Image 1 (cartoon, rainbow, N blue to C red):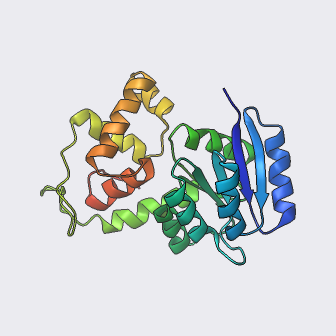
Image 2 (cartoon, rainbow, N blue to C red):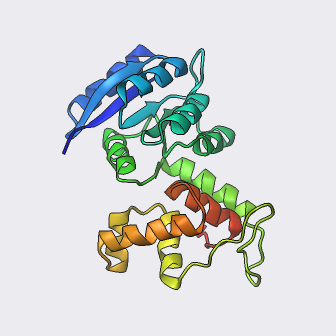
Length: 227
C-alpha cells in the first residue's frame, strides 16, 4: 500500500518542523509538503493532491476554516484534520461544518495524531475528547424532540428513512466515538459488516460522512447521550 501523503499547514515554521519530524518516523505516512497560510494550503492541495491535510485555524491571508471549506468543496477526495490550540465552540462547529473529518488539539499525543491520519483515510472521524464532549453537549441541547414522539422530521428537512434496530445500535456506538474495528468487537460483527451498516446509516440520514451523521442524529434526537 502506498504511503499516506500529508500536507502540513501552519503559520509557525517550528510547528511544521515538529510535525514533519513526528511523521517522518510514522509507518505508512510521508510529508508531501508544507504551507504557511490558507491560500498556500489551497494551492498546494491542488498541486500535490495529498491524501490528508493537517490544518491550523488562525493563519494570515486565509484562515484554516475557509481553506478547509474550499479544499473539501474542490477536492473531495482529500481528508482534512484541523490541528489547533483553539477548542472554542464556534470554531469547533464551523470546522466540522466546513468539512473537516478530524479536529485535534496541538497537545494531542503523537500516537493520537498518527492514528487520526490513518483513521480519516479509512473513512473514520477523529475528534479530540474535549472537542467531542462539546459537540455532544451542544447537540444534546438541540435535540428537542420528545422521546414519546417520532424525531424523524426536523424543520426545513426532508423525512429521513427509519433505521433498523441494528443500525440504531451501530449509530449509538458511532456517537460514542468508536471506530469500525471497535464496533465490530463490541457487537461481534465483521468490520465489513459494520462498514456496510455505517454506509447505510449515512445514506438514510442524508449525511456526507460519519461526523455529519452523528451531528444529524444528535440534532434529531435519534440517540441517547450518557452524561
